[in-house]
Length: 158
Ligand code: FES
Ligand code: FES
Image (cartoon, rainbow, N blue to C red; front, side, top):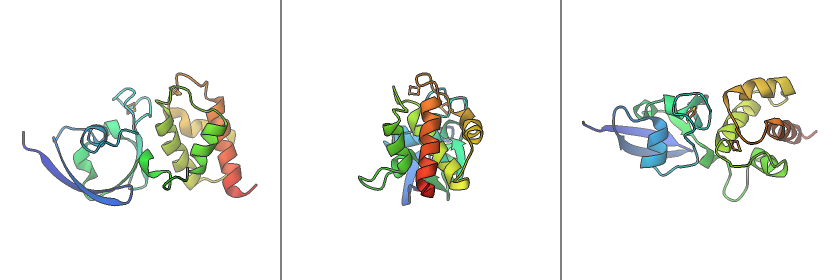
């Protein structure tokens, strides 16, 4: 089958790739572009491990076709740290030990950043509601929620 030629922006860099018409954005990121931070937990939109931003909107990369990235801006977990400088969320996840196996972690970080970009002062309920689409089999969620709330407080300077 003929490949699709896609011109896009990923983490601020203009980029082109070829993909199969039915290939998901998640598979393109991981298999064609070697951006393996986004994880495949379910491939059916249920776990959030593949969360990325597409034109500023939080999406499951397993439910988006690679071809749909044409002309759009994709942000992945690889774009979150600035060089050696971790994003405050990444730092707080470490401090709160909010990860164990780590498979869910990139998705939680991308989703939590999307929340804090939109709402810098979320309540615990809002954090839990926002992250309801991200599943973790290891942590019990409390440490993740604490890490997000602590990040929000620190970023607000309180
Ligand atoms: S791998 Fe996409 S939601 Fe689970
Ligand atoms: S840390 Fe293992 S699934 Fe969340």
